[in-house]
Image 1 (cartoon, one colour):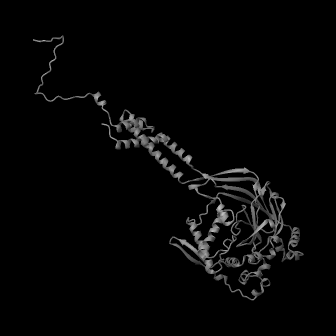
Image 2 (tube, rainbow, N blue to C red):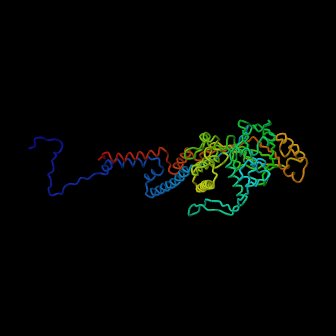
Image 3 (tube, rainbow, N blue to C red):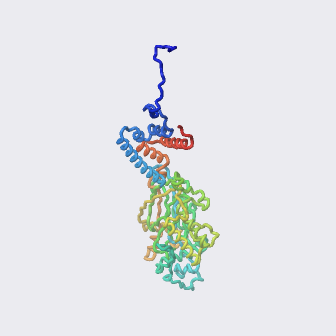
Amino acid sequence: MDVFRTGQPRYREPKPDYHLPNPKVFTSDNDEKEKPRGKCVTFFTYFAESTSFMGIPKIWASPRLVFKIMWTLFFLGATTVMIIQLVELFTTFYKYPVKTSVKLGFTALPFPAVTICNMNPIKLSKAKLLSCELQKTLEIPTEYQSEECVNITNTVDLSEFTETEYVCDESGCYEEEAGGLDTFYVRRELIANYLAAEYPEVRKDVGHHLESMLIECSLNGRSCDASKFTTFLSNDLGNCFTLRSKGLQATKSGPESGLSMVINLESEEFIETFKTGYGLRVVIHDNGTRPFPGSEGFTVSAGSETSIALKLVRNDSTTRGGDYGKCNDSLIFKKKFGVAYTERACREFCQRNLVIDICKCRPEDESQLNSSVKICNTNKEWNCQDRVQNKYVVDSGKGVDTCKCGTPCVEKVYQTTFSSRQWPVLRHIRALEQQACKIEPESPKCSYSSYDFENVDIRTSSFLKLKVYFHSLNFESVKEEPFYDTERFLSDIGGTMGLWIGASVLSLAEFLEILFELIFWCFCPRSK
């Protein structure tokens, strides 16, 4: 009998059927989706869906396989082109190219220094002060030789001279003797060597002096004289004279607003060895720099009026630095050598020091540096000097810069334009000779009375007029600066990455995020 009754049927627990297999537990699809995935999978899904790199979200989210392949190919192709272009950008940047910009200006211009040298380094009337070897090599007429040298016979055979050359080829460098030298060339080299062995005081005494050469002089409308010039010795041309006009500004252009000089070349004092022509060597250079008239400048012909029109070009390399190349500001150089820096002067002084270090003697030149070291005056020392200088030239040809002379930071270059006319006329020659006699009463010009066959050439070729002026007050400013600077380089990198894959600087931070996540994944416990 049932004690309890309800309106609901009584629940009876089924009896287990021990003859059936173990029941299986089935899970629904919803349960599968709700299963938590690993942190790595979740992060890369987030990265693929949110990255700013164009193409990756398309590859991840495309519903069809063909679209995934298409976007993958597009992304790989764009990335490849981007990498190629970036390589070109890096290559260009690390070549450190330099660009040159030219600007024109108009202002009062600094007047340059002007150096003049008589093409005849030794006066005939002073040749007796020289050594007998030099007198004989110069072939001085007997009446102008010193008494102790008259009876000495010159036994030097110029045709037997040879020259040692430093030759380099594929097998290496070696010395080679060159024979068959031109006798005129050999005589000039001997004269230069003998003259270098003379005392500087003697060399100055036997040369031409500006006090007797300068007939007329005016600078910017004001008269000038020999006291405005400084004298120095040139190895090839003897006494040279430099008009230094530091601080003088040219406020006008044209022939009447610059330097005007009338020069007496003293042609009657020319020695036959040098008497291949009459003329004046002229070098236009910046104030404070050292001229090298033996190898630079130009020659002004005798018996002419020569006008030299100038144009100033200012080269500025002060913006260089680091890998773009250094410029020399000349402060250390000027303190050491007493002149403003130029690349030519740097190389000349460097070669001189190389000779002193190796040959233990100094070559004679216009610098007069290290005067405490003896001058090279023997065949052994001259050969050593030639070897050092030839080796320097060969090394320079191979790209080996022994001296490391760089570009000056600021350099003023005076470009020149020439014009000339025959000058003076015969009537004016006599007036010039009278002016020369007032300066030098013992000059042979004072004994001339009329023109004859013997003196007409010397008299018409004894004077010249030189004018140096600015053609206009316009000038060029040439400035060197980096062609591909850092700002432009970074801009091009950003432009290239943005063009091909849509990346930016902040996009690169996504890689840091990936890196940190990988670190956490490897070293931190994984979620179950």
